[in-house]
Image (tube, rainbow, N blue to C red; front, top):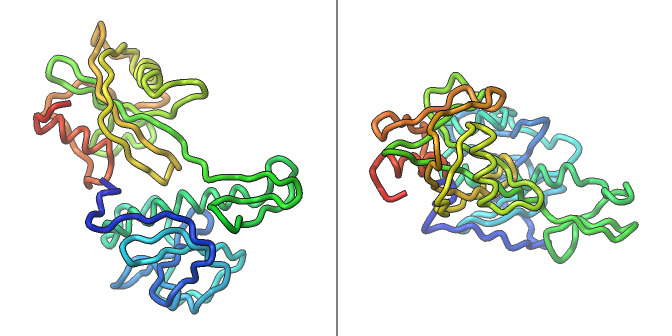
Length: 278
């Protein structure tokens, strides 16, 4: 999955005094796009390639490589071999390999948090970077804002040797499948989210809910919790057509996996497809 970068590991301890080195990777997001290299070479620019811009905020380290986020309101000096690409296209980029993709999605998560919290939600005054922890502080009213993480579930519903697979309405044309998924609402347990999301999207009841594994997924600023469960009652599907374009019971041979192995959804489907315990 996306976080499987061993023997390297993510060190996300906040280091407010960390300064970028020439080989540090710098993420620069603008209008739903990210700056990437257009010719052969590393996917994202280094501090030296951007001619050492100001306003670089330390994000994290993977192995010995440090990653920073450029928060400047004005474009730095951009070399001719770089251009902006939609963040959605990075996953299919030929150079987007682990751990670079993991770093990109984690940086995307933090970039969105910095962007939407430039002003205090309590009094409307500008926020500043905290000097001790990863937080934004309002110097006017003292409000402290921490990075937001949205809990969500991925659900593999099993019945009679088959698994419930879906296609989202927004991605009806893709050839591969997904699983039921959704965000946890206020006051819910994760298990309650599993039951509600399955019911809302397919009209099915489930039982024997069991936790499998979790995964950070920065594009939605969430932490995904994967669960398997069993059908409870009728297998007849009543699909929510606003959410889904397809929902069906698939045997192992009929499960079409995603083109990469980075997602928790894909790992859970692959586990079923290979006959492993679910």
